Length: 257
Ligand SMILES: Nc1ncnc2c1ncn2[C@@H]1O[C@H](COP(=O)(O)OP(=O)(O)O)[C@@H](O)[C@H]1O
Ligand SMILES: Cc1cn([C@H]2C[C@H](O)[C@@H](COP(=O)(O)OP(=O)(O)O)O2)c(=O)[nH]c1=O
Image 1 (cartoon, rainbow, N blue to C red):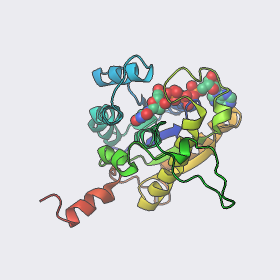
Image 2 (image 1 turned 45 degrees about the horizontal axis):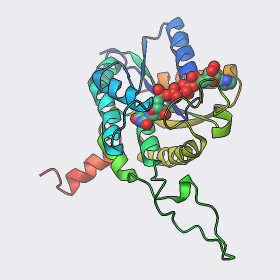
Image 3 (image 1 turned 135 degrees about the horizontal axis):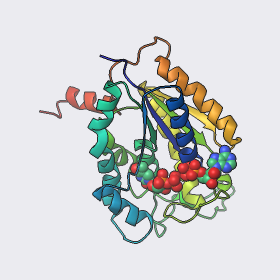
Image 4 (image 1 turned 180 degrees about the vertical axis):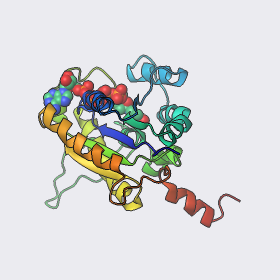
C-alpha cells in the first residue's frame, strides 16, 4: 500500500482567509509533486448543497435543526471518498469541516429568548448580547451527526478578530456574517479545539489569520510539511474517526445492543 495521504482541514471565521490559503496550499503541494486534492464544505454543487446555498443566501427558510443536519449530510456524501483518497496516498485539503458545523449551529440563539442572568455584583445589569442568550441547539446535539466522520490529521485554525474580518472584501452578504454571531462562533471554536486536543485525534494549530498573506502561507506550509512527515513517529497510521470516544462509550454502555 502506498503511504497514506494527510487529511488537513482549514477552519476559521468567515473571511479569515481560508479559501485564499487553501488555493495557495494546493498549488504549493502540486508544485512539490505531492498528490493532493482540494475539497470544500459546504459543497454547494450537490442537491443537498443547493439547499444549503439557498438557505445561506436567505432565499429560503429552514428549521435550524434541519439545516444543521443538511450541513452534516453534505459531508457524509463524500466521507467514503475522502477515506479512499487518503488510503490511495492523496493528501486532502479541506476548506471548512465538521468543526464549522458545530460552531455555527451551536452559536445560534433565539433573539426573542430571555437572556441568562446579566446582573452584576453592584446590582445593575448589562445589556443582553448574543452570548447572554441561551443556545437554540445544544452543543452535544450539534456534534452528534458528525460522530465517525474521517478525522483530520491536522486542523489549521486561522484566527481573526471578527471586526477585522468584517472589513475584508465580500463580508456581510450571507446569513451568519454579522459580528455578534461571529464572536460567539469564535468562542465555540476554542471549546472545540480543547476537545480535539483532549481526544488526541489529530492536531489543532491556531495561526494568526490577521498577518500578511505571505506570513500565513509560510506558517501553513511549515505545519503541513510536518503533517506529511507523519508527526513525531513518522507514521500517519490508519484514518481515525471524529469523536470516536462517543462511539466507544456507546459500546461500553451497551447502547448498540
Ligand atoms: N492575510 C490576509 N490579509 C489581508 N487580506 C486577506 C488575507 N487573507 C485573505 N484576505 C482577503 O480577505 C478576503 C476574504 O478571504 P477568503 O480567503 O475568501 O476568506 P474565507 O474563505 O475565510 O471566507 C479576500 O478578499 C482575500 O483576498
Ligand atoms: C461547513 C459549514 C459551514 N457553515 C457556515 C459557515 C459560513 O458562514 C457559511 C458558508 O461557508 P463558506 O462557503 O465557507 O463561506 P466563507 O467563504 O464566507 O467562509 O456556512 C455552517 O453553518 N455549517 C457548516 O457545517
